[in-house]
Image: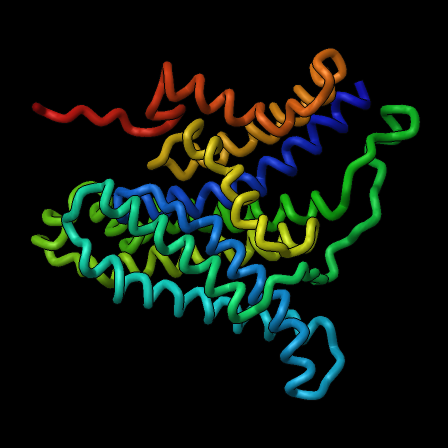
Length: 309
């Protein structure tokens, strides 16, 4: 029982990180109606910015305080993501208003390759580390219930709490603010939203800024755990099954989908892996996503779209 709970807790904590990355996909889709293949590259650029500026800023300003360096690096990195949002809106999205979804999809694919290349030019292609002071030591809980207690990672727990808080704030933003409602209106119909006075360009900038900040937090957490390298953009795409499972238009779906994927990966690897040679954690999420695409393509909480032909 203790081993099961350890695996379950580990899956829930991994699932919150998946949910955070998946939320970036949902935010862009809700505002523009297109799947953003550049979200993984945004996570990479954000993590690279944090990793390098946390080193460069103390060198430039001549101090040696890790906390201050991380705070300033986070602020500068957030500014980088805001700049990316403005540039994407000004030079890409503004020229693609009311275009087909396929056109927008290909545009985000181009943005992804551009950001990957730009990251290598500006920050280099080495492997970097991010140290934001997250606890690395394991801890034991429920030792009064189970002999020896249940082992959990304090680093994973901290990451899960940060992810959960940010996800909750974004859910409130979408549901209870006028800007959040405007974002949903833009996603439903660009022309109708413009006709009632919603500034489409400003809304797209806002949603890309928010998605950029989400990518920054996810990149910092991911980089702190695994290091920052250029495979991070591909690793971030592991959140694709999350949005397929939860639904491309649902913020709660991204949360539930992330938790299901995280728990499913850990439990299947722990209990089925030994009988099939292991490696289930690598492909479990994609097989589950394929099943949903076949039998419930809108996901658990997504909207079923019916077009008149």
